[in-house]
Length: 120
Image (tube, rainbow, N blue to C red; front, side):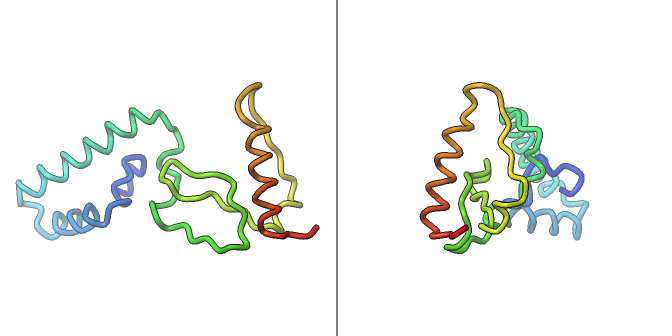
């Protein structure tokens, strides 16, 4: 699981428990077969996503938000991408090709900043 983070196996606690059982009883062919099916499914999803950063996202449900944080978007895991208001003054840049949504994202970001009531 650690060698292949792009499979996102740790996102499901049942997969972690299955891996622990497999470590404890490596001779169990049924557990091995079940884990291989889950790993192949994760590989298929990773290939279909075509997201080279898929293994770098934090585990699903691990991002904790508070009302003062600014939501900048959502990761493919469904978790929010958050920004502390104080970080707005830390050389923020938005880059992308024409038509990729930079202006729409900035509009969304400014609305979030205004919602939090952040004062410069």
